[in-house]
Length: 263
DNA sequence: TGTCAGCCTTTTCATAGATA
DNA sequence: TATCTATGAAAAGGCTGACA
Image (cartoon, rainbow, N blue to C red):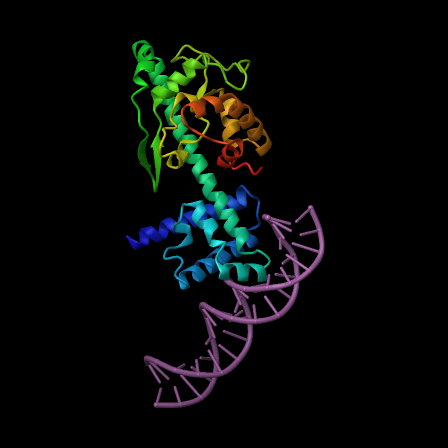
């Protein structure tokens, strides 16, 4: 069992190294030094009992951020010209990247369920009634808990948008074989992984679900910062009032942070 | 703020020789 | 013969500063 756990940590470390090499274009020599620096930080935190696990066992980027506040880490970081916080920052970005990939795959799963609902004429007629019964449901995926999306809510959102991309109704895609409508995808403006920060309200509601053409949907998940930022500006203007009516308060800045836009 | 080359120091490992 | 110790080479770690 111990060996399996070690293998998992080694896998994450190897994936992180591969991500640095392929996604960030960092040289192997530097990657080696970064991994060594992370190990040094890990030892410091272990020695002063701020940490009892390995850094690569941690999947919460906020916890990694807190390590940068440790006095000893700050001291060696200053001496080492930020060579300890730089790799930690990279690891934080890597963890967010992993979360984003999970968010995308959950979106894909949701959209397949939405299509199944919309292709059933009887079910389609009753979606608006059914959607009233809903509470956020946590589901377990790998080591992290995620909130299951309600496909009926998402189907409603697409119907309310008249199957148009909400960025521009001119974004025509193709007619879906299953639904017979212009193909658009459901996207949660406030990502569902943020439900944990909205304990009083359910963010899986029509007001938070946007119909997007596949191009805009991919762009919002993986576009350049300025492109995502532009999309978010428009969508936030469009939906903020509806969200407030549902008791969901979100500033544009906070929304951008959820998409890792540094502004 | 991040990257990276380069230099210095420390650690690890292999090998040979000394000793019990 | 087995074990310990000294030594040197290689690898890894730590740090600096230039540059983008």
